[in-house]
Length: 430
Ligand code: NAD
Image (cartoon, rainbow, N blue to C red):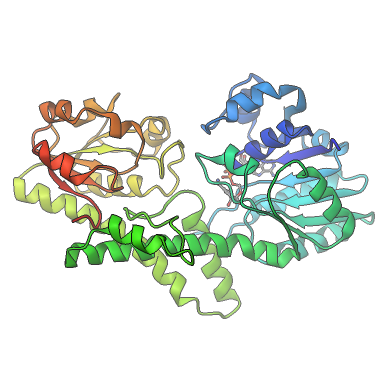
């Protein structure tokens, strides 16, 4: 049946959830404290880049509205999703101020039974905390649910509508039934568990994926020393059904708004429960080293050829998103710029966001991938945007000063690049 749903927070998760629930036929109100976001949405503009999102919001606009007024958003809707940010603090622990504020605002405006569904990634025990907090101020009936989100940016709409599973942490029948009904037209296994397990499933999933990435990167580093080729090794390893082929792509490491934060978050949760999660600490260290190692590779080439200019292709933490939060590319550009190296950058989507973060005199933001190669001594590919595979490298050769390609994402075929007269170095490639 059609449900009346409120979404608090219209970021990557909240807006995707809102658009997809509208598409599924529900009536959705999206609320955000960021007035600029809401006015853009009201004008039909989408404040983030996600393939398919704009189209969905346009097509199902009859089912979705936007407001900055939390009271209005909560008063008539039975189900309230929370999708606010839960950033890391300096010490890696999770900053819950937005979540706490959202709960406070819900309690203040709740007048009847509500299902409060949490989509944000939060420490284990948050659901219990929310229940206690609400009970202090509200004597009526309500349910708290944990419904962690597994979408990945760049594929958010597809991931939401075609997930591997939907996890529902619910501890009463009514809430469980409402949640199963909301998602009834999504064809995916629905796993109903207790709230704490649901909260932990989210962290465990991201930590495991990050572990796979750091593991394959270490094998890639070993390939460089032994002469193996990581693409062949990863293929052979991934053919084992017990391991699977995904997340075995070597590169300059993971980034984005989730993996680094959630790894730190799980380490902090472990510490607070006096659990020494040494494996996970190493995963994070390997990831940082992988980026530093890439910078060292660039610098050693520049030193050898007495060059001073690097062309960087790609700034977002992965393709098909404009998100540069904790992007390995941004980390690498930062290190190069701080070292006084001239950096010419290009990204198909993330330039505007990057301009606000990379405030150096020695950085040049270029209008095209080819423009970025002008006079470069090293071309460093840091995000595997599909358009980089389409670029005519003969044109690149006309523009660069020296013929060095460092491929941080193993996007190119080494033999083809070498045939064109470039020196090529990927990650763990022969
Ligand atoms: P985001 O920063 O893009 O968006 C959060 C939004 O919440 C912002 O627009 C902010 O203005 C709004 N907000 C904060 N407090 C508010 C309040 N009290 N009332 C109204 N609006 C408020 O964050 P995101 O990337 O969408 O992530 C949200 C949560 O989902 C985080 O916990 C994150 O870890 C988790 N998550 C993110 C992803 C992802 O790929 N981005 C995937 C899975 C889970």
